[in-house]
Length: 102
Image (tube, rainbow, N blue to C red):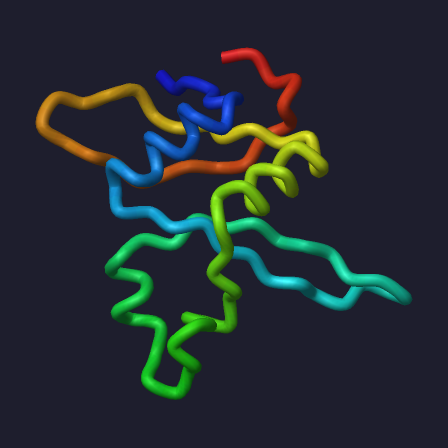
């Protein structure tokens, strides 16, 4: 079973409880760029490679929650996460259309 997180506050609380940080990358797409949202977790930052700049782990730009949530709303997305499992902080998620029902 899963649940859909739609408000900025619940998404931020879910991510921060798992040491998640907002990030994105901008990829070229024709004559414009496309912003790809991510949430990075501590282990990902540690494993992102020594060749990366400290502010671009794995080629991603770390950003603030306000900017990240504004882009999430702009793309009309929500976060689909698993149900709570006692004693486990699972950090698996996927982006889904904001109109998705749980």
